[in-house]
Image (cartoon, rainbow, N blue to C red; front, top):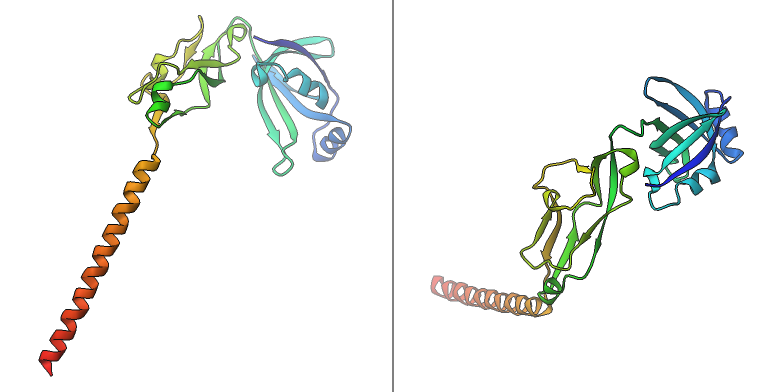
Length: 223
């Protein structure tokens, strides 16, 4: 699990004008809370935050958030972004106990090539981009890797099938699907369907012509 130091500054005031000033100076308003502490308003340098989160752990990086000489082991609880520019506007840090389990979301990545699936024209589909887990902060994996090489057209990988690192527990029902196999339409089937549709259209047109002829005959009889 990644861990890094991030400096934070106190002294910011509540209010949008002060927040705009901080952002103009390359800083991001933030708050740190948790474990019985009173919420503490701080600010962090935008570039330093980006660098702190640039490792493999990303948002799950353990941060030694240092405020006026006091270190708060923390992770990011929430990033609030600008609705248009998508730049970070505010950060919520939550203080953690390194010996207690926490719940976080970890990205899922597939690896390998499911030859049996591709040979049948199928497609391996990742149903969930992330997996919610419970773990102590120091044992949070950077990602969950799933090998799909052995899958065939009837395969499904559920939460209960996942091999997780020691000390990591998945949150969710064991039968929830994580990876499924989709049956894709093949060019042959598409051609057959097109021919069937064309034949049906011709048959319908022929029936229409017969109906017109019958209607004409009926008109003649009426006269």
